[in-house]
Amino acid sequence: MEWKSINEYAKAYGLEGNLPDIFVSLAEGVYPPKLDSFLIAKELIRIVQEGHNVLDIGTGTGILAIVAATKGAAVVATDVHEASVKCARHNASLNSVELDGRVGNLFEPIRQGELFDIVVGNMTSLPTPRDEQHDEYTARTVDAGYDGRRYLDPLLDQVPGYLKEGGYFLTQHSNFANIEKTRNKLDELGFEVELRMYEYPAGKTSRQRIEYFLRHLPENCHPIKKEDGWYQKIAVFIARSSGGFSP
Image (cartoon, rainbow, N blue to C red; front, side, top):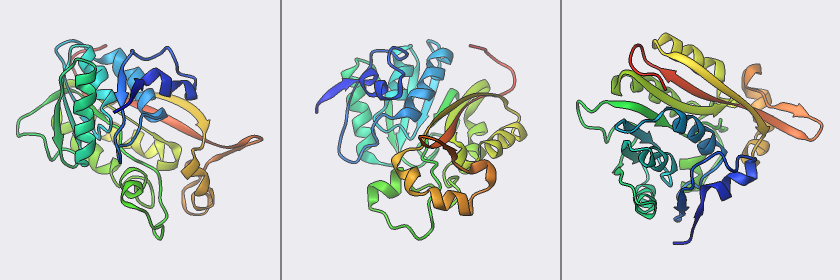
């Protein structure tokens, strides 16, 4: 497999120099490093400490898991896609770190009694018209249901049961999937929540769905029209359970 530094991927988003010098290779059908991964990585680097137990759900190429492992964390990396788990294992080896790669949906691969200092969940959250037809890759990496919350809501509902006291949950999504709804749900679950807010141009698939967003989503989920095109808000959620450590 060919490989390159994640900073090379990040240059397209103006984030070069902000991330560790980690190398990744891609494999067919595996979601490549993109903006969402880099924005979460910035917060993960700030929080993770040597000796932490970290769970990376929907690991893809494994870059978030590898970021944590390079800081001395013990990492479990899961993905519903077997080829992604294999790719993450390969990339961990490429960076001379270890991770425990497991295949399964959300928390299915986690053993009874396993608890983590940090859970990272970077799931697809793009609202998708009900009648759109997709190939397997697009369905797995882009289709998040009519409101973008097909995977996000189950993730939020279950994550408190897998965190140590004072542990952190990190996730991200755009305003298309309703940032306010996620914030309110985390508040209800008893988390202390910080938000990192960004504004970026809408991606290719999002631009193809602008009409759907405007017609079928609440106003706070609408794209933002500017002179040079359509934009989205992106929120990175840093949610801390009660008590315990601080970064």
